[in-house]
Length: 172
Image (cartoon, rainbow, N blue to C red; front, side, top):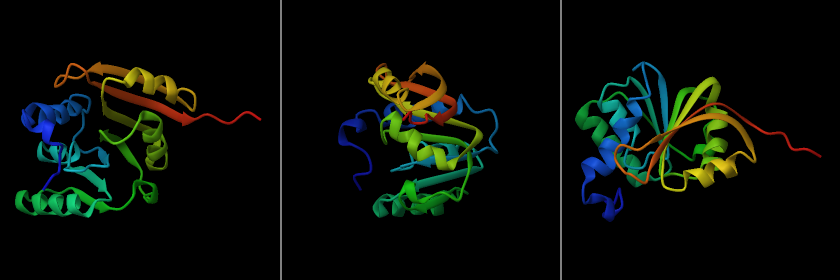
């Protein structure tokens, strides 16, 4: 179905599943509301649902990927919610945790996350080797507190955990 890149299939357990599972190390309550932005093949949201997170929403605009997720949901009888739409159009929900993997640069992820957040929302993003540049650029437009952890699945990757983020006001 071409749900993930061919080069990532050399060791899919490590490059996909372990990569997603490491998010759970930063979550202490399986009842938190979680949204996976641009979930694609369900990474990481589907994986979190499989390991028992009860309130997971998967968002993607690609109908082929949504069809796959509906099939998996039915086969495994998982309780996650699927939204087939553009992230920018979803504004009526607020989540405790926002996750994403390989969707966009940090600055754009903040833009997507803001309407879906409340004061205590935590963002957890799986990022690649350019995270330092992404943080520097995002600081031009956003205030945020963050913690950076090395990825357990890829020595080039990181997990960034963000709290207290808000848009900077333009100075005229």
